[in-house]
Image 1: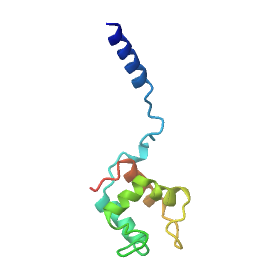
Image 2 (image 1 turned 135 degrees about the vertical axis):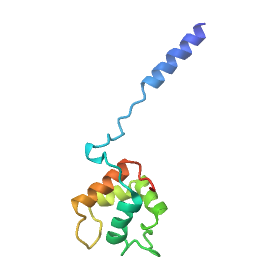
Image 3 (image 1 turned 60 degrees about the horizontal axis):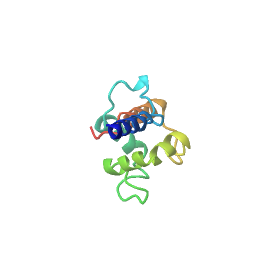
Length: 112
């Protein structure tokens, strides 16, 4: 009985220590679903496809699987939102496109 009590006590401390500090809350601006096929693919093809299209050494971002890998690794977020050095040599992305990209990532970067 004492052993069960100790196990349950340890388990409750262990589970109680779990937090979601690193999870960013979904912003209120991202309540409407963003579609990869309708919204994101168009932005990526037009704004990124010149350098990151088929045959690109930096990755074909017009391919969902490659883009998803870049999103999951944090590279996409860093280059587009933090260092803001993409699209390289071109005008910065407009706020509405940045917002769609941000919401799509917050919603799980789904292939929808």
